[in-house]
Image (cartoon, rainbow, N blue to C red; front, side, top):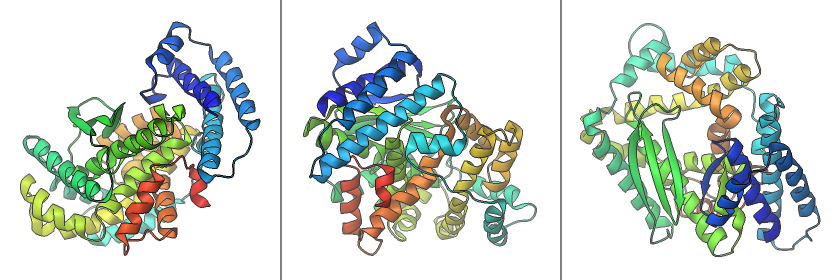
Length: 405
């Protein structure tokens, strides 16, 4: 299977020459990338080679070992997603739901407007002040913004805590480390650029005000036990120990991203079960940021309810990309049903412009990962089992469709 895997890696690198967002990370043999750069195949040639690689996968004998069965399914599904991405780059158009299924091996649910109105009616009773709930919520959030002069101190403290909690429960590579940067003019709020050898560059976008919840969110999601740990585990256990070359490259628009984003989001709950997050932030981060620690519980009661509105992002993306909403209507939808400020809604639509149906990986991915881990006994009541299942998942080639097995 390594021959097919090598073909897959070179195909991903080839697509990356046509699509600058496609290759999220690569730490395989430098000569493979140089070879592709020296003679980059056309999209048509890539599509033809992908079909050949898929046929090659069909001819590989079946294995009785689960890990090898998972590997075979993983490579096959990643190749199918690559084929779909190439078709899109060549001008083929898919609906939002078709694209999500082909690229991410998942079918996003549909939520009617009434679903979000029900949540907003509950928030209406919780958010203080007068006027429309969206305006009140925006005013409320501003009371919990981390000032720029305190931002790095708060983020570093959040990352230290997330790292310590992860290290207590998982065996991380001894050489793992990261660098933290603050950037502007991006369509995302945070990003992990994995460099290989358990090294990451974590970037935080400071274009817009950052509220206190984003410190732990980004520290856990981009770092521990999120993307940094996920990539380190795959590199250590699959690329290095097993010698599987397909795990030296990360194709962004692929099923792997649903697992990556889903585990990164659920990892926040894994690291901070129950009320532990509120306790840590109330004791450490709120005072450090100059915020009233007595309001931590109140803030997170509202924050937990607003997180139910995350699926509003999918509905905006679906309608916008399928042509049922204009850009302005998508921004207005996000402002109304995701409680975003106009500036944040504009940033989100820019994200949708670039990453399209990728938005499903955050909310649907988190829900699928949570259900999978809890169905295997990794509940909040058994944190050690939860960590064990989480660690096993991020060290394996399991697909989104495999989370439903």
